[in-house]
Length: 256
Image (tube, rainbow, N blue to C red):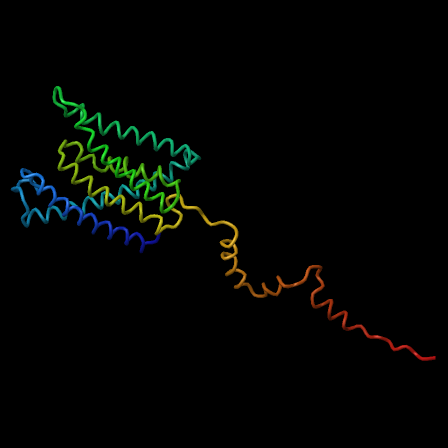
């Protein structure tokens, strides 16, 4: 990945995260009358709250980018350790299942009141899982099925790890706010990756056939005399044989 492409990912993700942060802030203030987005302020939008929401959205977008590039590095190291992409996929599926269990059980065990049902703690994990499955399906449609498990792992497990600060507060508005920004930023980056890098996300490489001929064509075109060498007939005769053959003199026959 070039610096130009990285700068494009950085700024587009930053702007997208900021816009989603402001939109989610306005939505939460419309749905919940008793919340304040900035600590120590009254409920509703004012100049300080708008500035706070913009800065928080930009910060979450940078956190999303750190998680994205960290995952790419971890994926590269893991494939080298496991020596098999299939085995690494099984490990990712196990970690996804473990994350789903942790997102349901840990809040219930730490914050549930006596007699409270676990059903109320299913909403956030299941909504996040539905969003991750949708983005993974979309990724497969644009690349191939090998991209499903890595995309699902990144969109669910990595997003949950990035949002652990909000999830520990046991606040539905805060969970929705941070997860919405992270899902949009992470989804944007993972869907942009294969367009900027080419073979990322499990795309098939073009081997043989027209691709190989197209790759060799510039080399042959830039080699002096390559076309002439390729046009020589088999057997090594070439123009020398013709020249030698034409150089023979016929001796006239004497008439008796």
